[in-house]
Image (cartoon, rainbow, N blue to C red; front, side):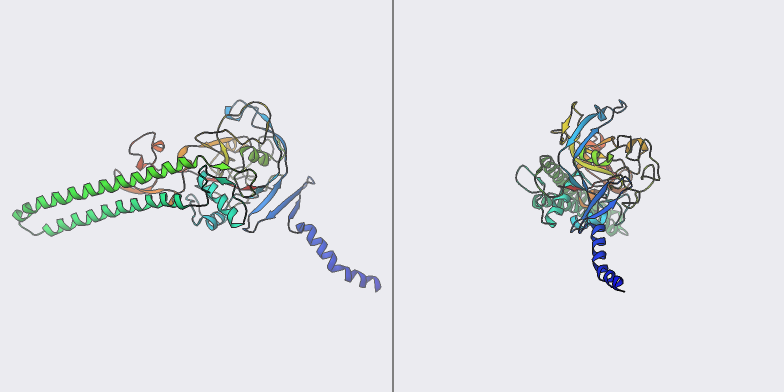
Length: 407
């Protein structure tokens, strides 16, 4: 009986020890079959992150099939970092940004998609501020990307100018329709007398619409100029806030110690990742890699910090990509891609229009007069290969999202 009594007294302590062992007293730990411990943290904003230790790996591919993956080179990452266990979900994005730009598939636990690179940077800074961390990104003029006064003005100018143009068109149509109705039942002589007034009204409406349309396009141009200013965004590597991973960090974390085409080995199947499918899947639907990260292959492409550029030969330490460029790097492939395009070394790049500042629903409402169709598009000449009527072009960013890292 005495032994039973002692055991009973020790039971609460044993339970506490067992509980702390399981969650590492604030940091959850998961034992993998290879004996490696995965350390996780859950932030105050419910972002689950996995610790990625510093190390070395061979970046790129030894194959000459894709020139931008060569030369394969050794990369040393001297600092460890936390990386999001999952891609940022639509719920997480909307809770910080106040909107959900996703257009392909919507769902709180689905990865956010149709996200511009600029929006991802903005999200990182805003999330940092919510948690009381130091924002990583800033502009050369000293404006923090989480301070939206200038951005909001440029965005609202486009929105308001577009509304004035649409209102003007509707008003003109109502007035002309009213004049037509008023002439019904009148004699031919009365109709002829009203013809000049009718023509004058139509001309006035056309001129008014043209001016308001020009003002709308001017506002779009101003927004594009603001976008160019954002190309000067800088990353403070000493800040403790959230940021996008560098391309090297992304591939290092994706490989998780592997040297094969995929972190699953030489091959991958649709039971291991979401690719060659017709929709996105909730984050974490597939098994993680050896370091505890989910969906590094497929689902949605993921933005990296780097400008896109060719690899230089030789070993690199903490590389952060090209010094300048016109496109940003995307990694991981998406549900739309085939197996070859979700390889660990596969690189993708986004054209300039894919890196636009986020608009309301990420697009302008555009009316295609030729086909009498209202759809989403962007006013960007590059979308339509220089066609001046590119306002009718439906350029879309695609199934692109991101995950965050922090020191």
